[in-house]
Image (cartoon, rainbow, N blue to C red; front, side, top):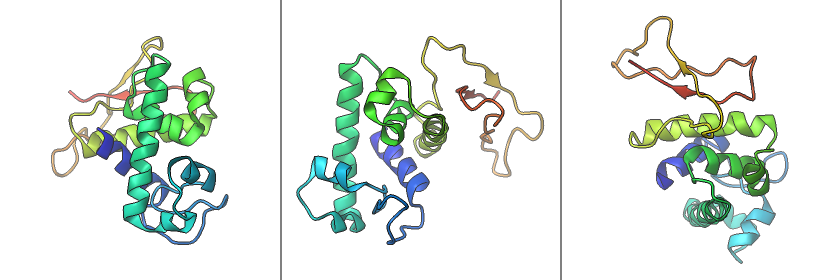
Length: 165
């Protein structure tokens, strides 16, 4: 699950591996901010552009988030890891992240489930009713794989599990 989650985060953050800094100075495959980079390494921040160094720090950050979620009694799913990655660990634990972070977590969890078939799709917390969205037309893609249907944009706070029959 870790590899799939980190690859999903990479695909969302910097799929083309651009080397120019992001809007807030983020660098590398995972678009680290310097403060996050410094939490896990003493290597110069410019090393975030080196994929190997960036992968190493990504694994450390993933494990730090995972440990924080577990200490809070929260199962560290791809969804929760991505929510904490984008919205901050404290906000993920308190379930008070910005709306955009929830949408990011949904996309990351869905990508991770495609990358690792054993990982579940975006799973909402157990206390929230989880509707199954049935596709209206063409439930299967050209290759016969299930299509991922994005959640309606009118309800940005809702989290969905994508189901296929």
